[in-house]
Length: 180
Ligand SMILES: [Ca+2]
Image (tube, rainbow, N blue to C red; front, side, top):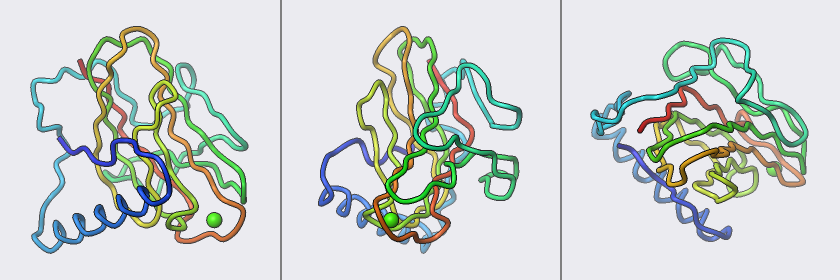
């Protein structure tokens, strides 16, 4: 199971994590590592999934200045995925999933292209920061534990600072799965 960037506060920590992640990805590319599309935990049962190939309704919603939007050209598997809204400086665009869960994991694929250190993707579970990434990071599958039974609130948020944009200036998400 691929799992990186578990929380942490502050810009120094963010820089360190990005630097370490970049090194790790470069090393894996050099060695020809193929990223798995299945979790290493093959016994985990997928109880719910979303591939973003149909209109979003409940249990999905949006926060911030603009909703997320479908993207046909940037998925990891050739199918549509979803990306943050095209926001301007000091704006945010959040994607929220609220769902009744048992203890298990939430896993998904994500890709980031942004101004390193300033325009940042963050993922929260029940308001607690799970990972934050900026700069250029290709498609990776990540997994986070669901520790609270009952209604859980998952939020993927893209937040821009006051100036400058780099790269595609967004984060993409695809193939969200909840397992137990
Ligand atoms: Ca910026």
